[in-house]
Length: 158
Image (cartoon, rainbow, N blue to C red; front, side):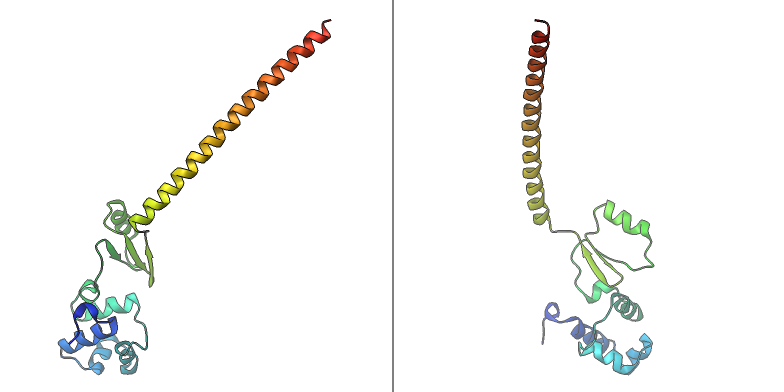
């Protein structure tokens, strides 16, 4: 027997259906789809969308998180999820991943952020040094202009 953590999504769907003592035909009927289409999910011939997975879970009085292992901070939402609930989850730090319209959008891993922050700090330090060098150069140029202007005035007055 497989460890549940090692089961593919299609295997989990099949096992859950069997645990609920439903045939493929009965489950397909609950889902409002053909038995052939449902069977393709269990054979992994057809990918299941997030919305379909949500519907599957709802039909069996389950949550999506009961079917797939979601890391901490994962938020599943669709077009019907209010923007406020998504924004609140982001603002309070509880959501790191979003599955929206069947696409997964995730924030970079913390280590990636540290690497990017360090790169940006180094770039900022380089730009600050260039700015300081430019300011010194402009100050020297202004000083030379002032000296030349003074020399020119002195020569005109002779």
